[in-house]
Image (cartoon, rainbow, N blue to C red; front, side, top):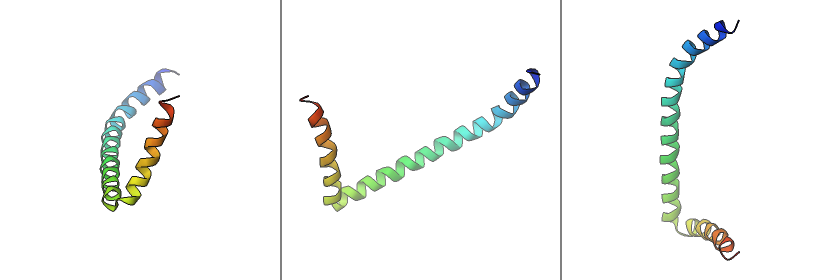
Length: 66
């Protein structure tokens, strides 16, 4: 009984895995590009980006002296 799921899973899994991996990588590339664009827009707006940046900088600063 182990042979059927193994052979079937191996053959079926290999092809979709390659397609899924390519799609997965493409999806993350898009997400990365969108995130970079959003950050650039926040920086262009100035105040919104600085407010978020200040909050991010405070956390590491609080952790460093401790």
